[in-house]
Amino acid sequence: SEYMAKRNLARLRVYHAFESGSADNITRAQTATTGLMQELGSLRQEYSVLWNRENRGWWLDRIKSRYDKAGDELLNLEYTAWITATPKAGQGVMEISLRSLYGNQPVYYTTDGSEPTLRSARYSEPFVLDAPATVRTRVIVNNILYPVASKSFYVHKGVGCLKELRSQYSNYNPAYTAGGDGALLDGIRGSDNFADGHWQGYQGTDIDLVIDLQKVTPVNIVQAGFLQNAYSWILMPSVITVYASDDGVKFLEVGSVKNDVDPHTQGTVVKDYTIPLNNLKTRYLRVVAKNPGPLPAWHQAAGSPSYMFCDEMIIE
Image (cartoon, rainbow, N blue to C red; front, side, top):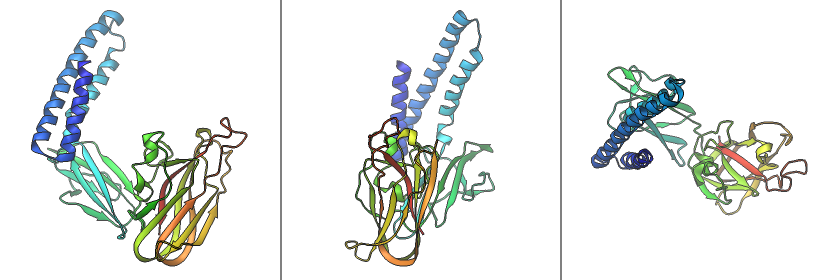
């Protein structure tokens, strides 16, 4: 339909405007979204006429509200706040950048999880987080408070320090990639939904990664976050083993932890496994989470390769 074509064009224009920040691309995006709003208004009117003919007005208010909601979202698009985080390898910090969609609206923020208001800090340049924090931000114009964007970051010594990912995550669903190779050291924790885009899924294989802390660093614990949902073929690793090295080539085992979560457990289980290292001084760490093997005989998909889902390897 004409509306779908205009919607796809508007998405493309907005994406280019956001990525480039160029005045020409912003103008094209604004023109495309204005055209989309006009098309949406025409559809709303036409649909109302047809609905009244066939249904005598019943539920029409609910139908109209859906069009109105879509229209409001388009109208407020340039007042949407965005949060971008960049891990700084070896520094144990995250650099946070904030902006409105087109970078032309005032943005206010907090880092303690509270609601941003005019009394909050106004964003002017990137800032760093050196400890776990929740960043909340919004555009405020003429005392109008637009929707809040929020992200929580778990900043630790290993953030951004991936040297090598030695196993391949699943591409069955784009959400299972969690954003790519660096996902397990990006400081972002998953929810209790394994498809939220923050859990990285591995099917029928171990998780094996090497971490470069950039310099010899004291490490007290390695903590690995995992999710189990047996119905969805996701089980906990059988064992997680940590190795250390001074040169990144020869590794020695320095600790491990076995799984203690029953695979029969119903629903979703989220657990952080902790391996104490007692102030071990090292530059390189290797973490291996052992796949539990094929799904057990009692499972509805017995014999199929099981998944493991991990959200973060935390180095403290």
